[in-house]
Image (cartoon, rainbow, N blue to C red; front, top):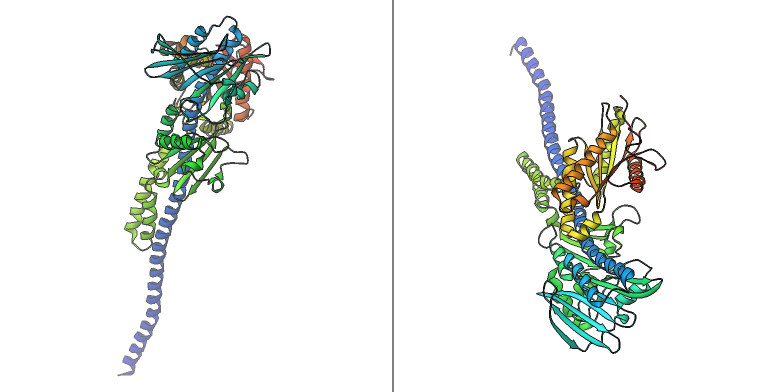
Length: 561
């Protein structure tokens, strides 16, 4: 090899030695990049799946809370039917006891049962031991009457569906209302207040029941005690119809965990237990676990809802809303899979994702999408009022606060209107709850047709509605609110039976540029509405400060340009 060739060879060797580290380094960098990309992909997939599981669990909580709200509202509506007939009968006795014959009283009791089919029986006990009961029993009604003057006389009347007498039988009945729980509870309760008894066994059927009861007094003297039973069969049907799916269950429990109502599948078990023990069954007697300690209260201390996952079942226990006046507990149970459809498939997919390629990552993403989409829809439903389709109170607080902050940043005025249906309870009493529900639906439709898509229309409870709007142009506030109020009133008159007798009163508050909070505006609008009702119902009132109402003829408030 010549020196020149050796030099060239050495140069090439040095060049190869210099290139080799660079090639190796590039390969390592490329491998690191590839591994990093794959690790990132897998990590993102796993993280996304974990987030999906967490969000699925949150959505399950929201869904179950929504189902609990619906069920509590339905149970409360049935209980309200019972208290309504008790209140009406007691008030009638207090005002017309001296002119009220037993025949006339029985006829009034029949009319109330006819309007409230949720009530099983309505009865009146007298201080001398006398007793009158009217109860629905196919194909008509049964009237039992015990009179104590001059001798104890027991009569049973059988009526058809129109309360015409079919036959009368005289018999023997040692029943004394004065020793029954409903009589003692009502007689000892405060004046003019309907209360509920603890669960007890009915004398005739030995099945559990809870009664609403109220004392009727004249000049402070007890003249009668009125009681009524909720139809447990009807209430069981309500509990059977949970909007979750098969396998979900709901129970109504007393404070001592005694069972007031249960799904129909437990009827035979409850009847058998009551006959054998002569006691109202507790939740544990039906195999319901005492797992309240494993649940977590939702919110701060004093919250009325506990939630938890016990094994593979979600459990929700919640008290009834305070305005119902019921110390009952509503318990709901459902399988995890029922509230989070497809969640188990996602968890299985997660194990495969860690050892598979990008294709499986995409499959996992697709599965997550399939799972999240229906849960997101359920979550959306949880923000709306089930009956009217308007925003509910929770959604009003969320969207209303956001609207106010946005308006304050853009220096736009905001109008908040509260609307109340006058004489709504009378509409329910006369025509039934189905007509009352129709009035609420029509009110919601009228509000939606009267506002813009960016405005908020909400039902916050009972017959109370709220509208929030913001404006950038000069407007006549009074005229805008009156237009909304008139539209609701006109729609009720045209589309609801008896709607002409339902007045519509509106109160409003305006935040110009003073950055009022949503709570402040609601309070001001409510103050205007309440103060205005003292002047006249069925019109529009604006807030003028210190809870004073401005009559529409007194002032026209406009938003300055």
